Image (cartoon, rainbow, N blue to C red):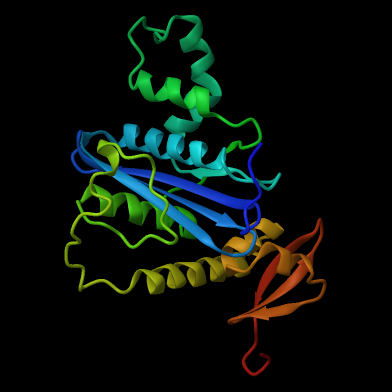
Length: 255
């Protein structure tokens, strides 16, 4: 049983992996959101790896971290890796029956990580697929972390919590390379969230309370108290059916 955390329960989790060369230098990133609105980010690097291994390592480190934390019942682990989702959800049972061999009789690639993932999986944390580079703010953020680690840089991490020391983490405290041509990470993340909000409003999509908390970066407990329409930046947030919310662009002068 996970111990109580002063930040509340985990309401969102996302992971990603990256590799330059595939095989080549790789990195992985992970992000956790809590009910009080705080964020915890972590990641690491490997000098010689593959993109798939980094996706698996990110998920493994996330599941090990989530096992230590209180979790919201609607929590899912969001990933853009169909390899990870299919492996855990569909392929693994067959691999195990065949003695960790594929249908073609060949040894399963990345068997060490798959076995660790099998042992670390949490029955109350299903995996959810999110299309990469689609404007999802958490997916974009963990991609930034993973890419930075793969390039040998040390990204600024929100409430950083590194995994146990290993070769995957050796660059975590290393020197940063210059990124003077980039906007601050906080501004990049804000712009991504605003672009996503525009698409959600235009499409009339309904958001669950957990999804809304991710978008507006406000504590879940505060949002749960809201019953009427309210404003967030350039949008009105309106109640929808099924305890959901919708965004609508506010007219000029109405805010």
